[in-house]
Length: 130
Image (cartoon, one colour):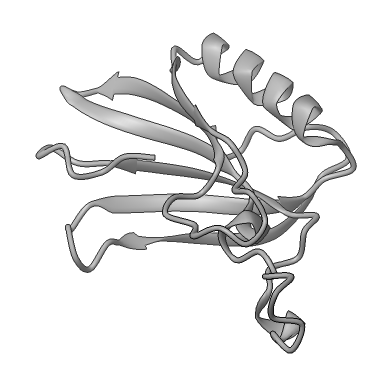
């Protein structure tokens, strides 16, 4: 699923590792799309279903000026060798929206709004998730 992406997208980042707190592995990619979010979600819903992934949940973008506790996006799950794997399609810029009450906030710290990510995590003890 990390290789799947809509036509016209450009790979901007490729990463993998192990979560230092909970010890679960992760791998992901970020893309610059030429599509809106609905088209991205439709693409991955179709690709995920073809690969045996099941829809799990959807987190909506945070309201401006609110505390962000989890990233928005869509989550799918799949059993792989007795372990639940999680596939997340998400938008990095939603994790750090500009607070309109703080105009002095540095825009350099904000993720580009035109990127989306695809990430897979899994853990035998259930600590991984979307």
